[in-house]
Amino acid sequence: MPAGARVARRISTTLAISVIMQVVAAEAIVQIDSDDRAAIEAILERQAVAWAAGDAEAFAADALDGVVFTNIVGMFSVGRAPFVGQHAQIFSTIYKGSRLTQEMVAVTPVRSDVAIVDTLTRLVDALHRPPGIELIDGAVRTRLEQVMVKDGGAWKVASFHNVAVHPAFANYPPQPTE
Image 1 (cartoon, rainbow, N blue to C red):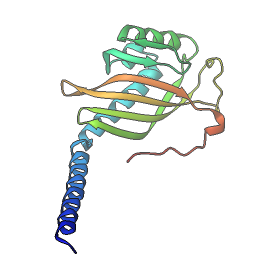
Image 2: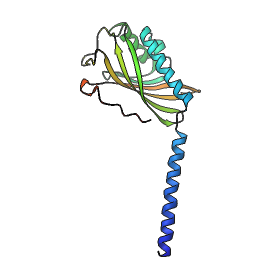
Image 3: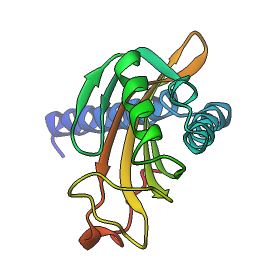
Image 4: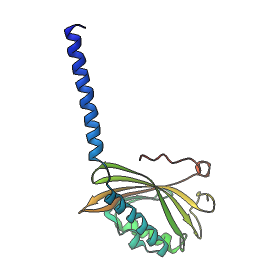
């Protein structure tokens, strides 16, 4: 093998190893540890408890003041007040007495202090449902994506985006990232 080819091969190998090491290092940097995962799961549990109690303030307790919110029918708002207001409205009307559960499908770390949390939700015992939303096995089913950020050492909800699951895709398997 000519000397130039050997040098090029060494450079290529060195570059490939460098890229692999950087990818491995980046993966290590953006992992969610077990304490952070437990804190995120605790937020989901607090949301479920607040929902069952019909308590909009408690439901929003872990949200940032500037929370970005898109509900199941596409209504959009920015800020805690409209987030609380929209939930107070539904807790006193169509979703009065309902219960919400969330199955965590994926936690995707963006940075050590930012995670995208994807859940499958199940809403039961609703008095009514929004127009155009179909029940699946007697429940309103959604995919909820919450962007959570670590703020002052505590995880908070920065964005809350809810999309109804269409019955045709109810059994579509989630694709977890973990």
